[in-house]
Picture 1 (cartoon, rainbow, N blue to C red):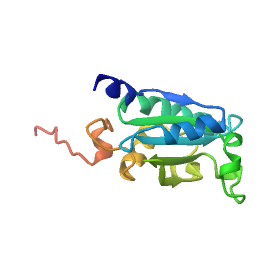
Picture 2: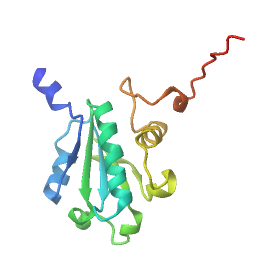
Picture 3: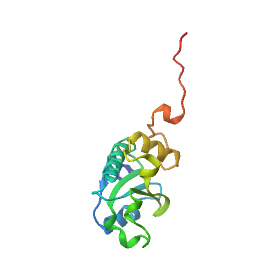
Picture 4: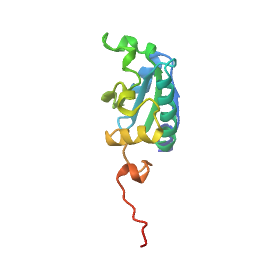
Length: 150
């Protein structure tokens, strides 16, 4: 339906600031919607950089994928007591209200600069982002091109 189509269109990074909003992001979406929640700390440059990359990627995946940024303090009650800010930036991926993937210390995996193309490639490689929406440059997808006319 038209309403469902509108509801499943996002196209931007949604910033939340409460545990209720966090739960709402997870519990109110249909099972086919992928919800990516960046647990962040605005005081960390790596988290600000990761937010920027997610914001760019969200515009390339406007349907069926919801991109959210949430300060770690808003969800501390829901996390293991062992979870530390040193694990940031952290990305939790939900479908159908369940965690399907989690990535911690993303700076160690991707470097602190977080180029949107690198983050997008990482998410595609891990099956988080799928479908025709993918706009990862061909070189990242392994495409080859022979322009030699010699």
